[in-house]
Amino acid sequence: MGLNDRLRRVGLRPLGECQDGADVITLIGPDEPHFWPIFRASPEYGDGAPNPLDRWSARVVNTIAAEHNGTAIFPFGGPPYAPFQNWALKSGRCWTSPIGFLVHEDAGLFVSFRGAIRQPDRAVIGTGPCPCDTCKGQPCKAACPVDAFADGYDVDRCKTYLRSPDGASCMTRGCAARRACPVGQGNRLPDQAAFHMKAFL
Image (cartoon, rainbow, N blue to C red):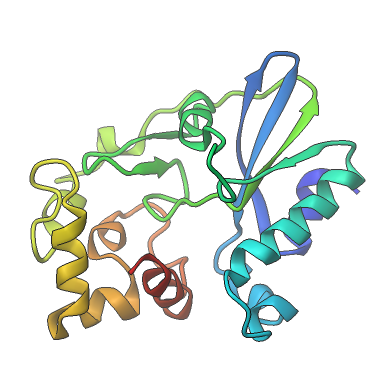
C-alpha cells in the first residue's frame, strides 16, 4: 500500500513535501473531518494520560514510517525542535498568511502537522499560488474579537480573552481568525477545535 493510502486509513494525509539533501520530507497532518472520529476511538484519547494526541501521533506515524523504510519526525518532544514551519514554506503548499500563521493551499489556516516522514527520494514541490493573494477582503485580519493580530500576534491578549466568558465561542468552535479563512472552511469539527483550544490555553 502506498504512503498516501496508508495515511488516509488512519485519518491523516500528506500536506506537502520538501527536499532535504538526498531525502524527501513528507509533511503529515489531519485529513479533516475524517481524522477526529478515528483519533477519538484510539486508546490514547481515552486513557486519561497526558498529551494523548502527541502519543497517538508518535505511535501511528512511527509505525507507518517503518513500513515505508522512512524515519518519523515530530513537531513536539523538543527542544531541539524540527523546523516544520520552514519545511512547510519550502513545500510550495504553505505560505505566511496576513495574520502571520501558516496557511495551506486547501487546509487554510487550520493547517497543522502531526509529524513528517524522511525517505530517500525526490520531493514534489508545489507551485502555488498562495490563496491569500486572491482572497477577497482577507477576513482573517478583522475576525479576532480582541484584535490580537494588530501588531504581530499578542498571545497574552488572546489567552486573556479566551479565559473570559466572552471567549466561549473561540474556545468551543476554534479561533475566530482561523475560522474566517474561506479555504477549507468547515472541515474542522467543533469538538476537535475545542480540544486544540483547551490544549493551547
